[in-house]
Every structure is written in structure tokens, then in C-alpha cells.
Amino acid sequence: MTTKYPTLFFAGLLLCLTACKKNDNIINAQLVGKWNVNKIVIHIVSSASSLGAVHDTTYSGSAFNASDYMQFNSNYTASLSTSGDFSYSGKATFTDGAGNPGIGGNTYIYSVSGNLITLKSTLLVPGANNFVDEPLIDTIVALDANTLILKNSMSYTDITLTTETYYTRAN
Image (cartoon, rainbow, N blue to C red; front, top):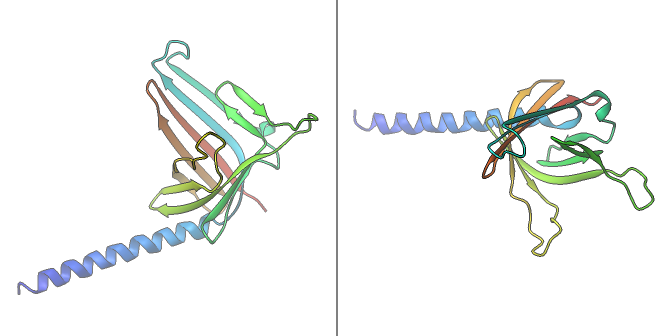
């Protein structure tokens, strides 16, 4: 009778591990494709007197164009394209030396675990050490055939920054 319990335990553990992997594969299959940005909500809580206690900024509608999207591929790579830098103080747009609008972006290798997606940059960051950014870990708040909402929170010494990005699937 004592040999049944370890066998049942390992069988249950194996079932749980394969069920989790299967769920991650389903989530990845739902993620694959091009997602257009349609809303960004930035929420800052700060103890720094220069920012104030709470600061909220929302971008939607005309703040975005066809250059604002995230593309997830079935080989666990992703690319980000953006028409500007969206911050709590306003949108900064990119231009070339002649003043023509530019497009920013990044490429990633990603993984999914439960409702977390980890994005590891594959681009070098300009700087003395040419280091690769720390991975971004976003929470998948919502995911269905047409809607994706990703939430990211970062904490610094006196600031907590939370960004929610709302996407719709591109046709």
C-alpha cells in the first residue's frame, strides 16, 4: 500500500506539469499574429514631490497609427513597432535628420507561463557596455480572438509605474 502513494503522487505531478504546458501552448497559439495598439494607460504612484502622488495618462484613438503594433510569431519571436515614445508627460515622435517621421521598435524572444509573458530583447542597447535589456515580464490581463491586454509594472526607488497596453487583432 505504501508504494501506491508515491506512484499516485508522481502521476499527479506529471499530469499537472503537462496540463500547464498544454495551457501555455494554447495561449501561445492565441497570441500568434499581429496586434494593433488602440489604447495605452500609464499609472504612476510616486513619493517624489516633483511628480505628485499619482499621475495617470491615457492614449487612444488618433495617438496611434499603422506603425503601432506587436507581432507574435509561432517560433516564439516577437517584434514591436511604435510611432513614438508614450510617456506620462506626452508622446514623443521619432524623426530622421530631415524631419520625416520615423518608426521605433524592438525584437524579442518570448515565453509564456500561465498568464505571464516574458519578452527578452534581441537588440543591443546603445551604451558603453552594449548590454541586452533585462527581460520584460508582462501579465496577460485579457486574451481572446480579437483582444489582448498586457500589463507591466516596474518599481524604482520612489516610483511605481504601471502600463496597460490594449491591442486588437489586425485583419
